[in-house]
Amino acid sequence: MKIKFTFALLSLFILASCGSSQQVISNDGQVYTVKGKKVYKNDVEVTDSMTASEKSNVFNTIDKREKAEKELKEQQEKLEKEQRRLEKAQKEAKEKQEQLEKEIKEKARARENYLDAKKDLADERKTYERRLKKGKLSPNDIEDWEVKFKKLEKKIIDLERDYNRLK
Image (cartoon, rainbow, N blue to C red):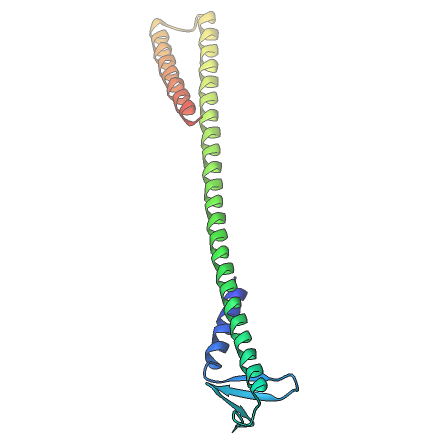
C-alpha cells in the first residue's frame, strides 16, 4: 500500500513539475521541449521551421503520453479504492471471527460451569447418603443438607438456562 501511494505521489509530482513544459524525443533522436504550442530545441524556438508532420508527431507524442498518464492515474485510483475495500472486508472478517471465538469461549465456559455444578451436586448427595447411612446426621443436619441441595439445584437451573441461552 505504501509503495502504491508513493508511486502515485511521485507520478503526481512529475506531472506537476512538467506541467508547464514537456520534453519529447522524436523518432530521429531529436529532443524537443514543448511549452504550450511552441516547440524549442536547445532553448531556441523551432516551431516555424518544423514541418507539419514533425509538429503533429511531437504533439501526438505529448497527447499519447498525457492519455497514458491519465489512464495510469485512473487505474491507480481504482487499485487504491479496491485496496481500501479489501482492507475493510478483511477487518470486518477479522472482527467477526473474534466475535465468534468469544462466543465459543463463552459457550464452553457456561457448559463447564453447568457440568461442574452438576458434579458438585452429585458429590454432595453422595456425601449426604454416606453420612446418612452411617447415622452421623442429626435432624438439624438433614435440614441443612436439604437447604444446601436446594441452593445447588437452583444454581444448576440458572446455569442450564444461561448455557441454553448461548446455544
